[in-house]
Length: 421
Image 1 (cartoon, rainbow, N blue to C red):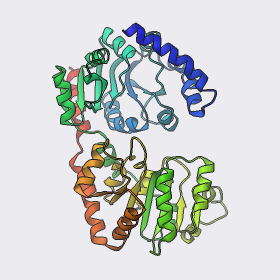
Image 2 (cartoon, helix red, strand yellow):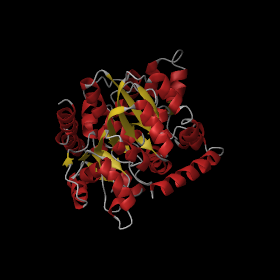
Image 3 (cartoon, rainbow, N blue to C red):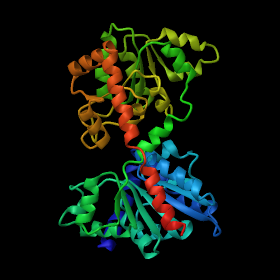
Image 4 (cartoon, rainbow, N blue to C red):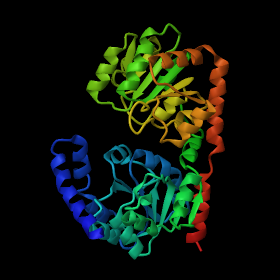
């Protein structure tokens, strides 16, 4: 079966190269993998000791970051090798400061798996949340390299738990230990006979708690806000923006809006700006003109569109209310824990059931799910007019984050116990 799977991977590789001719994202996917082995050979010597972390994309990277940070401090003489599967993760975090080497994971062929492990020779491997690549995992098992799943999530509809899922069930035998987010994941693994599993929780809580310890100030946001109640719309998609812009254009409240779209392509940003009837400015326009326009001029604007990446988390610290986008799409809402850690109420779209933290905060009423324009208008109007409700929901959010931290320490304690004997 593994040979047939490898044959399918080789077929997929051929068609991916064709797709790359027509898709910029697929081009990054294909082109980025061409220099992987050359990069590894140039940056790893036979004397190096290494640890390997694999993240599917950006969300998994954020999830693994607290563990990488702690592991790095405990294994200072090891090089951290970080791989991504998706361009949306690699392209955003390829210049991160936590890993010594960051690159794409080669496609999952037998040859690639052997070549990769021949060069890297990791002492310990961490797969974050999910992604189970049979050839890599099989090779890790053959070489008896300790492999851990971090912040794992398993669901009944996954192939492991189907009658035809025997091939993928074999992948699970590779892992020395499973650190999972919830009890249902633990029970599913136990139903397959695995007892080497612990409910450690979600490391993202530790990630967002640590945000409070850093400097989150942004002078230009301070100037724009000018002590005015501010709603931050983060990671928005067109459907989110349609509803939010309608609210903005019809709002009579003394309130400011900061919009940080998920997609910052120039044409989409321009369309967004054109749709807003109130006085709006782009981050790029301000930053390009910053040498001639004083920061105080930002006070004159009602809407600030952030067409850059990497500063949304800090911007949330200036919000009285956060709207987090993605909830009208599939699989659903984006990261709500970043605004939650700052103790502000959150509004999201209807698609959030795949995200445990969103489901929990909706049930706790710190987060409000809306399905249409009327519900959005009503929710934001209540939150703007009633400071007590706003503070109550914000307190629920921050308390929820604080109550769920600690997963990283549980994982680290076990890893150190098993690997520093």
